[in-house]
Length: 402
Image (cartoon, rainbow, N blue to C red; front, side):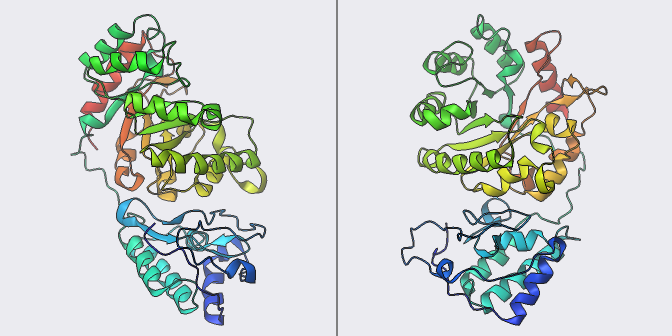
C-alpha cells in the first residue's frame, strides 16, 4: 500500500454528515461515527487495517481490508478503505451514488466525498489527493466503444485444457502438439495438487513446455488452498503459473461466501509473497439472489482485497443466468484478470467461440477497465472432439475485431 495505515482521529461535522448521507441515500443508511475504540489506530504503519467490531449494516458490503480501488495501477489509490460507521466504508459511500452519468460525474462525486473526509480528519490531505487521482485515472464512466479495429494480443490467448480432457490422460503429447499447431501459446490445466489429468505437475509441465505452450494459470481446489498451500505454490512454480484459481459450490449461502472471501484474502497474502495471485472462477449459481437481495458473487468481490485476489470471469456462465459481463466490469473495475471465453448457442448450450450468441467484441471493448491479462477459450461439451473445437475457437478469436 502506498500510504500510512494510521487512521486520523474522527471529528464529525454537519457538512460531512450531510454529504455522506447524500452519498448513501440510495441505500437509506444513516451515517454514524465509528466507536471511539475503533477510531484509535495503531502507530505501527505495518499493522493491518481492522474493521471496527460493529455490525455491517451497509448493503454494499465493502470491507475495510482493502484499499480504495477503482481499477489497476493508477486507479488504485493505495488509501485504506476506512470504515465510516455501521460497517459502511469509503467505497460503500462512493458506489451508493452509482450509476454515474459519465467520468466527470464520477470524479466529481469522489472529489466531494474525499474533500469532506479530509476536512473532518477521517483521511489526510495526501490520502484525499490520492483518492481523487485514482478516480481520475480510472475508466469508470468513460465510453468504451468497439470500433472493430483492434485484435486480441496472440500471446494473451490460451485454452482451458478442460476442453481436451478426454485425450489429455492418454495422449497428452499429441493433444498439446495439436493445440500448439493450430496457434495456441498458452494453456490452463486444471485438477488438484499433483493430479492434473492423472499426472503430477512435474510430469505434465515438461510436456506442456515441449509443445511450446506457457501456463499462466492452473486450476486447483479450495481444499488445496486450505490444506496444502505449500503444494499449491510448488505446483504453480513447476508450471510457471502466475495465477491459481478455484471454483465454488452451488450449496453455499452468504456466510459461506464470506468465509471463502476471508480464506482467499489470507492465502492470497501468502501466495503474493511467492509471486502468485489467487483467482475465483464463477459458474452461474454465484449470481442467484439470496438474503437481502445480495448475490454470493457480490460478497466475494466486495470482501476480497483486489491487491490479493483476482476474478476469473467465465463469460458463458455469467451470461447464461442474465449477468451481463459488461455491467459486472463497470461495477467491479480492475478485478477481472482472467476471462474464460466460451460461447453460448441459441438454445443455451455450449458453442465454439464465434458460433454462438455472446457479443465478445462488446465485452472486449471493456478489457482495460476489466484489467484482463489472459483470454482463455473453453468449451465444456466440445464437438466433434476437444482439439477440433479448441482450434475452431482459436481461429475465431484471432479473427475477431473489437
